[in-house]
View 1 (cartoon, rainbow, N blue to C red):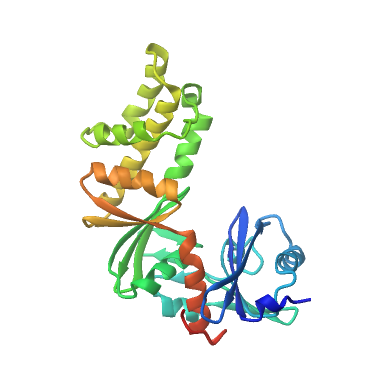
View 2 (cartoon, rainbow, N blue to C red; view 1 turned 60 degrees about the vertical axis):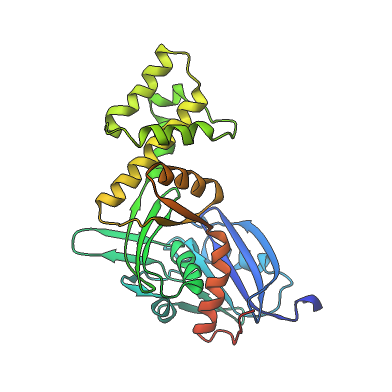
Length: 310
């Protein structure tokens, strides 16, 4: 039975990643009526299992259209939504939405983005919805957006259109080095204090030594001095983030004086500290907060619902 408290609902929005899925029941003005969370299943579920999981996650909610972003649209997801080639605007995303019907309900999946500039190939899936959410507030934005994560994205936008992006595997490289190389014997996860990280980025920002030539020095310091293994863990993070910031600018992504950082709170704070050490300010925006506005906007533009912004 559908609860009477959900009578204003007009859309189900899903942020469906590799590990977890978030759901929001949205009203006709985009406000949140109810929220839920669950496990993902991407990469392990069959199509029937996705359908059953979706039904369980939305149990009791009204039979309104659903729109999903993230890895649910990948080849290993519920239904594959083909990549959209850049340059791509929000209107282009609308034209490339993947629609299907499930148990009498309209379900829509947002495509990822792909880049093929004749020299390299790149893809993103999930981040495009966060960008679309940012553009609901700044539709004519031009500049570079940094999206730190396991696979950091540098995205160049011109007048509200994604024209270029590049992926840096900084987070995954950090995990590999700290947990699966000789450095694992010299590092422990810090207790939560980040003061040493910010001190080190200020120091390292003024040095010109190579990343490859610096890494083993962390191991040597642990062997030869009475150093803190948690601080070495933070120093590795500082080295890799500064290396990414340097590489991104060498690769042609211009950073203005105030850089837009979209991602999780803790990680964007670290990148902001590194940018400050390079004499650049930054504005941090939580990426998860951009997804519902983006999906609501896409649903309205594609006529899935007739909505009005709150």
